[in-house]
Image 1: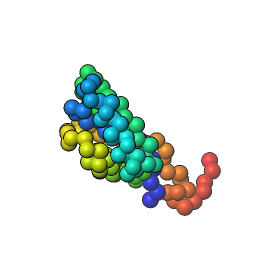
Image 2: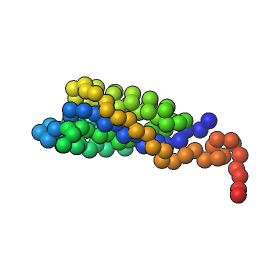
Image 3: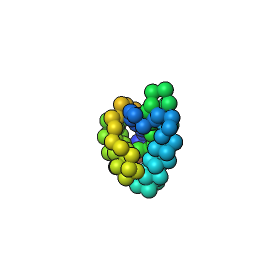
Image 4: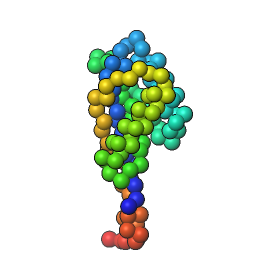
Length: 111
């Protein structure tokens, strides 16, 4: 079965406080780009909730697999960045580009 493209959003606690969010985002993006340059990672901070949100692309057969793969990618990049470990609050997988019918079946069809 062919893989589809998913956009993954991973929200973590405690790293989005106003004083350190920008530094944490830069460290994370640099580490993520070094390990997964094709994932197109971007970061956002919520100062009120003190969270960081990483968004990037993953290829997987379904949303569950995308969440598992993406969670591992996120943890690897976070470890490489030197950012202290913290709680993952949310992982959200959104289908961006489904596999085409011909990729799934090997057939080309027209309606």
